[in-house]
Length: 100
Length: 211
Image (cartoon, rainbow over all chains, first blue to last red; front, top):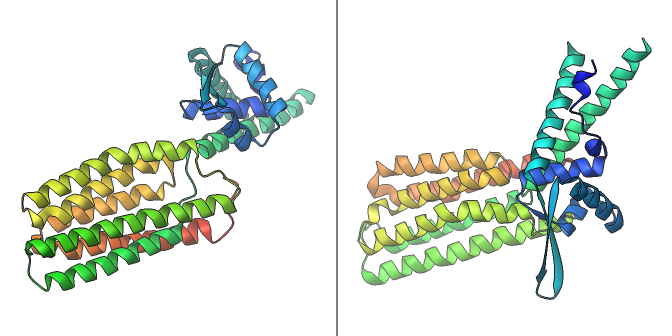
């Protein structure tokens, strides 16, 4: 019983962090404003969740300038991808078990 | 018993999480502002252009140099008008749904379609310059179909089947070399109109479902 919860990742229990990782799984990289628009959250809220994912080593940050505007792009790291795949697998297993 | 209830509640929660993952993956990777109306208009332009070209050729299969220039002019004007219409309507649809037009998915879509599209364009130009007029329609239809199949990954899945139909039209046209214009009118005209009506009724007429 306990074993099947092992791969449920606490970091992904938050809807916004879950959304960020979902998008970075299917997009090579995404910028701050696009993430903000698709998740419909405030700057501060998004920034704090991005920080948490960065701290966990699941995403990497690339800062640059587009003309004079700062541009921040985010990318899922290899360990972030692996952790998220495991998380999805664990969710599916839990649901499957419930149906049996 | 209590444990079982708790487990059920959690399952509901996990199910929601999985749905959210799917929803965000879909939303962030697909360009959904393609408009059905633009398909109908683009198809109509193609039919008018084909009708005009048919008049210029007036039954002859290989035109003179001036006729060739006129045909090239019509083709180019149709292309510019078609691309302009598609972009304008997509922009309008994006605006109406409060979405941004310059989506990362749009770039992915353009990148995927560009290679077969540019290859097809140059290939077609090469055929014309070498006088292989009878296979131009076929070649452009096949390459256009391939580009739609490639682009479909980043937009509505229906575009994939549209691409397949374009490829099939091109291949069939290959066996009727003197009816290239008919194949061209069907592929770029009729098929665009059918696809446009299909997209319009499936996605545009009702407010977009929350993915």
